[in-house]
Length: 384
Image 1 (cartoon, rainbow, N blue to C red):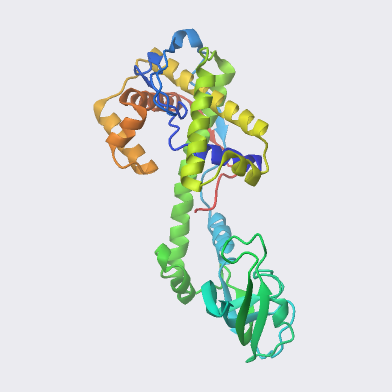
Image 2: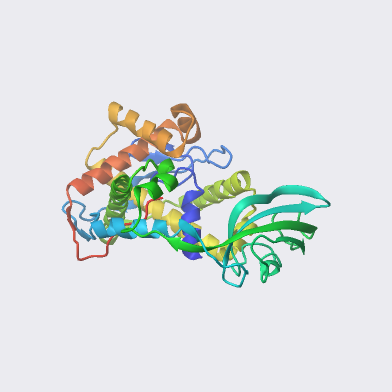
């Protein structure tokens, strides 16, 4: 649950850049001033000198060791095997009487007060008896019935059913048992071009070779992204060990409040949820939520200040061409309507500060001694 919460904490904040989620305007890694809060455009008079906040330790020549990010044939096979587990095939059997555990092919129509309701009708659906895929009584009502038989099931939807119009309502399902089938699964070694073309054409795969090549490319792309993220995290961890960072008075509280405001607004606007509903869905308490938000923002601010200090010491500034590409990348990656929309939300100087911080990170990485060691844990993940 805690891992899920952390993921959502990051996901629900639209763009964290490096410095957190609040609007921030300031001067390219030099002295920074917070002028506007994301929660409502209120003015803040806080400012800080990064030299007073950060006492840098060694940041050149950092020695780091991470896992391997290479994609092997075994990685591709495992990924495809995992995917195939969600794509069963069905073969007809000679069985004529439905029993627990059978997979039956059925046509059905759900009626409420004699009228078919939305989502209650299907033809040629495969249903495993005992899977509890349908409401109580549906699957049990087919046990003992014969292939070719037409069955009427008088059932009631549960009170807490997600469709409010059906919750607690009495309905009739008219079911025709077409056949009893056997569920089988393709494997990496047995899948065919026909099977791939039938199930994965939307992914651009027409043949087995297409799928193997495409999965490998996705894994490589994911691993490259993971490599970048893991390397940056390792850099931050090492810098926090060798440097001392003191957060400016009041800045953490301000950013935490900005984050919570945006978080709750996103929950309401995008998911129609209140914070209490979200906490209930993750099995978390408000205290746990507050602790994780505080830690998340504190880490973000610490990382931000470290990059600002390095940028200042190395005279790293925003170049016009690179900054233009950086802004366009954010617009594309985070779905902004335009650069103007991005700048309107965060301010030109805030985005520029983030770009300079990224350049500072690149500087540290370029000057680090990094070993990607196959002996460490593999970083390969399933492509989405």
